[in-house]
Length: 85
Image 1 (cartoon, rainbow, N blue to C red):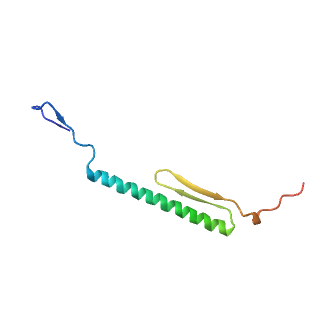
Image 2 (image 1 turned 60 degrees about the vertical axis):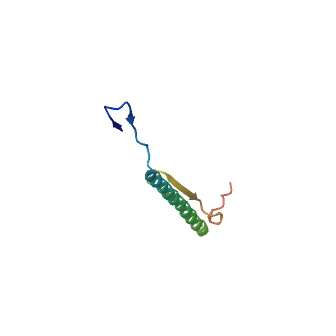
Image 3 (image 1 turned 45 degrees about the vertical axis):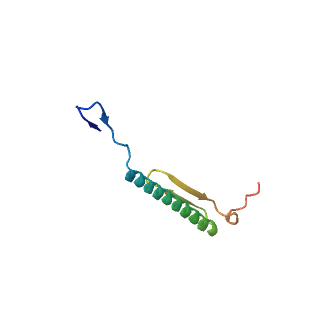
C-alpha cells in the first residue's frame, strides 16, 4: 500500500498477480494428481490383498493429516465354521 501525503487517495495494489494465480493453479492440479494416484494405489493394494485371500489393512496418510484406509477380512474359505451349541 502506497500513501502519498500530497494526494487525497491511497493506492492499494491488486491482491493477486497473474503469476500468483497460475502458481496456485499448478499447485492445485499437482495436489489433485497426488490424491488420484494415492487412490489408485490403495485400490490396487486392496485388490492384491483380496486376491490373496488374506485379511489385512491398507492405509495411507498425507502431510495434511488426512488418512485413507481399506480393511479386508479373511475370505469365507478361511473362516472357521461356527461350533454347534
